[in-house]
Length: 145
Image 1 (spheres, one colour):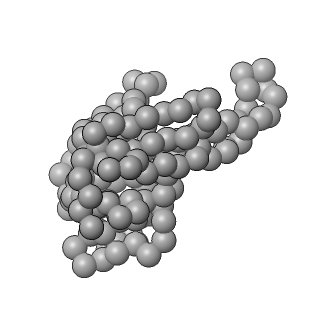
Image 2 (cartoon, helix red, strand yellow):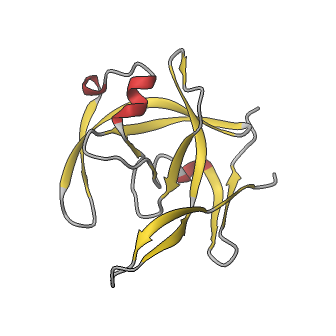
Image 3 (tube, helix red, strand yellow):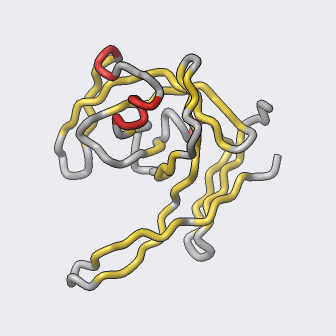
């Protein structure tokens, strides 16, 4: 199966010396489904090889009528060592013609939407980050549609 490819997206960035610039990041558009609720608009998410699990802002749980605190409580620890609380919920992720059931941890302590290794990467044979051409390629395990 041919890979799904996405160009990295530009984001504002402040250099360590304070100079403003642009950094290109591997963000991709996905859609979410929870029970009978479907998010009509694409959600931009960072494909994060440093994240163990999917971690999302609670805004998308609200759109899907997910009662966040009814999920299983988990703790996430970031690279700064700070721990945040999140609540696990089963969802379906849809990317192009490919979809799969997985979990997302929703936390009011994050604004980012991260796709991590155990709840996203495992649904692909290979994920390639091409830093020179600024393209991310996803090779699905199977085509479900």
